Amino acid sequence: MSILKKRFNLNWMFECPDAVLTCSTLKCGEKSYIVFGGHDKTLYLMDENLNILDSVTFDGWVRTTHSVDITNDGCDEILVGAGDGNFLVVKLVKGIDKLAGIMNYKSKGKVLSVIAGDFTRDKNIELIYGSEDKTLKIFENIDSSEPKFTIYYDSWVTACTLGYLKLLDVNTPIYGLLAGSKNGLLQLIEFKENKPEI
Image (cartoon, rainbow, N blue to C red; front, side):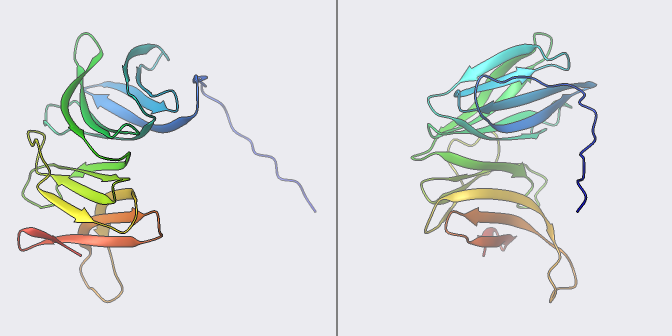
């Protein structure tokens, strides 16, 4: 029996104060940042020199993040889901490298998964999150104060993503929302006739 050795070059490492549950990269023009959070209930903004530039504190673990340029200004926004039920969108304030909240919605349970994209195919970015309250909520845009669609489940919605999926019995790939739940359900949701269709 032979032993395999893992060989790699460690570029850098940062020691976090507690368990990291999520991390995303934020692109803004030519600059890149790292956004991460976890058990210490704090979302951090870090530059390429490993300097913490800013942080946002929650009353629960920072469970999930997703970066996307919602405002089409060349600078990503970050969707954040926290254990205290907060679904938050933060933006990098150019020039001072600080985070500013531009949308906040309070859920009845922990926010476990977040994603954003043009789910409805109307050239508008929808904001989507799955939660411990057994729902998947879809917001029409960044200016929405309430979800446009709510899909109910038998258990927590623990994962969600958007993309194309090629099924065996369909010739054309399907663009849709894929959602996963705590009880093992994995479901493809399409947008047809102005509403989500399972």
